[in-house]
Length: 79
Image (cartoon, rainbow, N blue to C red; front, side, top):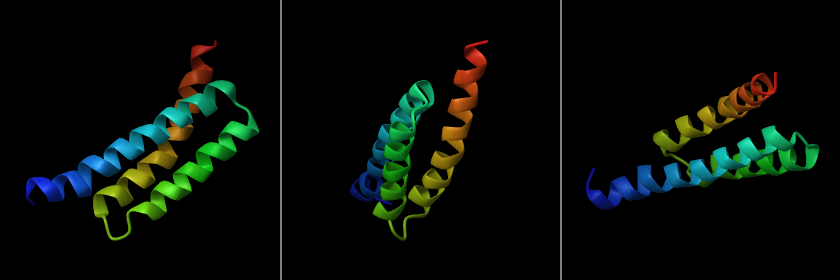
């Protein structure tokens, strides 16, 4: 993989993933249905944005698990 391919196949999906993770954190802190719905729409968009990209596919799977983990971590921090 050359530098251009790396940017397209790894760096761009990762930067996009990071935006989704920040939204998951916002949703887990506010814990409102509106923000969770926004997160799930964004996660769905992410998963559809990179067809045939194994790295992005695995990041998408991580994204769904990460939201649950963030919610749990935020709830435990409130105790």
